[in-house]
Length: 159
Ligand SMILES: [Zn+2]
Image (cartoon, rainbow, N blue to C red; front, top):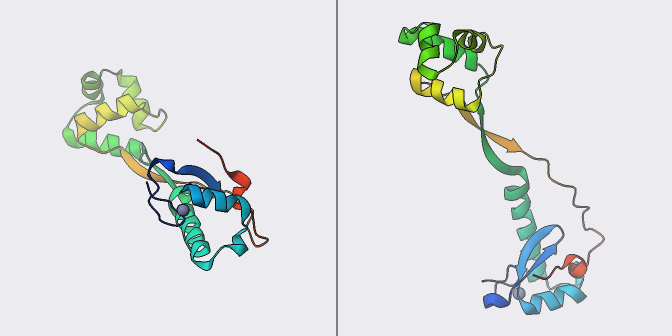
């Protein structure tokens, strides 16, 4: 493993430390260093690395949290159009996916949101896509910024 602060190879002696809310892997010498030295007192090279690292983590981890799949907004219209295009009656479509006709009617009217399982069957029978990938945006935590300086050792936790 590589120390994320100084970049030195530190084998398995690295420790996870939380530095200003960002999880970093630090080598033994940086951990020691972090416990005693404030950010302003760090050599500029290390300070720069630290800020770069914090910036990077905020960008990738907090803002773009994860991709998820959700039903497309106009699913009921897509289903109805696709069924008509295929020439299925509601009865026939219901039979094919194992649902009652009245259920199909409700789904097509938008009164009933199909379960994921039913939606997948509909996708298969009708050759349509009902799910889309959405990006969940999570609001970045307030980190309580560091113009006053902080002690790196404040949040050290040992594994
Ligand atoms: Zn180091």
